[in-house]
Length: 324
Image (cartoon, rainbow, N blue to C red; front, side, top):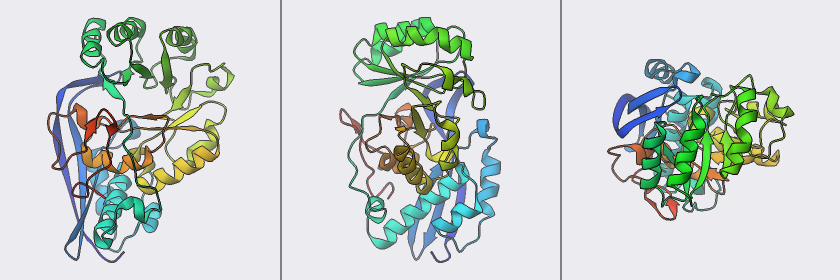
């Protein structure tokens, strides 16, 4: 792609209510937005820097501003490592190409037209009483995700199951358990009908998963970033969580999806807490996923113009006014 003007800015989007995981609480989604302009056409992308991966808005902006004006997706993969900065630029390049060609991104990528995908709705970590109330409010949703990873998790899970007896439940432990804790908890999770547990042990300390009888499917999140992660996941995990902010954009996310399926991993498609602009490219990755978790916009008090549409069928593909 020829030279494009690039604009980078930081935006803060208030959440509908404070959102808590084992690592802390947030009240706003802090995102970095990239706009690429060429011949009157503008492509956009969004990323969420994550301190867990030694990222900040400042470091991401520095990476983006280091890029040359003459840029395409292939060159981008060589210039920046997997991560939030590359994600925003990669998705903006896809969007720009779609607008310049008058086609949808999935046509350019040679993919079938995407369909709605049922998405999880994430319940914030809280007291069992408040999580019971939250579960009751969202009991009509088919898939609930619970953030756990503390010493007092079972009362919370039991409260959610009581409040939403018909919903499928998946759990994200956010690296919060030891191997001993997980071995003790797993039978109880299965008894309560949990369908999958995400990243129960810290990344880099998960070798004991290979020795466990995994009757409950285990998904790699912090342990899986791009295709280079896959060899180390064999025998430990049954599923990989693909997030654009980890892969460094849609280009690598689609490649990771293909290779993970070839290696018999199931696919989960996840997100950081961001706007519909961040989720839009991930809808393409989510097609046919075992679990989709693209509820970021549902946690916000406001969203972008032409936001993603959510209904009983799930999250729908983006309108071209939003992305792609």
